[in-house]
Length: 485
Image 1 (cartoon, one colour):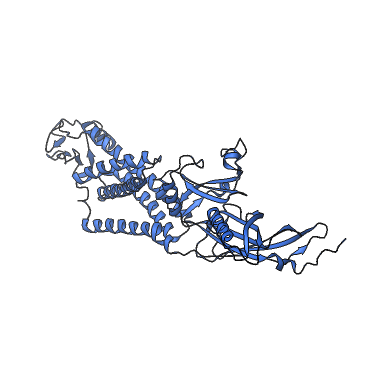
Image 2: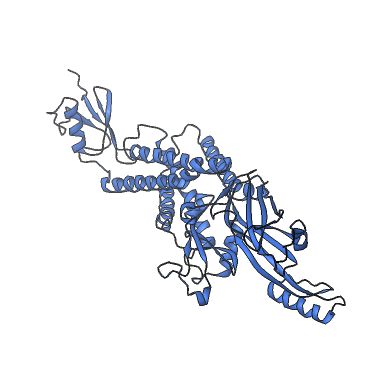
């Protein structure tokens, strides 16, 4: 029998772990005497007397030298693993909606990068168990460091974006504690120099930097540059057709032809739209009264800021004849899509109109700026119904149809740092179409006008219109005069 002991326990390393060899063959390592006994039992030596120097040779200390602080190590690995898992889940929650359903390729790439970041952090969480355990993988420390750096970058970006508006969102309860956790994790990993086992640490650092730079560039492109460079163009037409006399009633039927085409490169959501036909009334004078003209021009200008005056026409007025909507709110109008509508309205044969005027207007939002819950937005709410959440007494608000839907930004990174926003549109015969965007759900509920204006600009909501006029005399020239009774 050899004089050398066949079980050797090496001196503790920097973490208190002691390597064990049996018969010159490495069989593992142990944190404590109890763990050593379990190892020998598992190897088939349950009766080894660990205190017998003829059987076990101790280097760098005896059987009582176990400097491992198990509670501290376990708390550290639990906190590190929990933080990495939470950060991985947050990255996937942020990135998946864009990766799976964003409108543009750049937005999908940004979402995919966040999902990939979540996958890397998930792997880091698994390797954290090895790094604070046996360290069987050389790269486990560097992988955990990479996961902590990704968490720090993501949480710093989220807090910075939140600070711009400082609005409450439930995600604050996640990314703000995670920012503190990532700073602690980075401190622990740097103190332990977790990257030292990587064969080429400089290449590792360069890879981390390049990945962060690509993510930042992709995010900036998808959020700011790409939506701004795609131009928006619309072609709207509104024309009167050939009038026909009603066979049974003393009315004239006037056809109205409307068409809308999205000639731009980006689909849009139709927020609200309206077409309105007016009949102009006037009094004619061969001399023309300049004083009356000026008074009528001022009156018209005070009413709608679009005053007009003619030399031989006084007392201009407009009578609403017909009004309606071309699209239901929330309709998506794709790039290149063209739609038409033919509408017929009636005017009395003896109506005192000299001109007929039609206004067509459409308010829209670029689809690459946000997403609208179309199912909710398409349902009208009557403001005069007392059970409606938008009830307002008709004497105060008039009678309106109100539409409202949840509005989300085109980049989910912004959604998690902002309060939910809502797009609200209304339509009435008296006031025509209106719209607003706000984080306040009830219209007029202490909404800040500056905030509303900022949100409208951020989502790029705009209005296009077209108009047309026709002489009533021109319409009637093809209609035979009624026979005297």
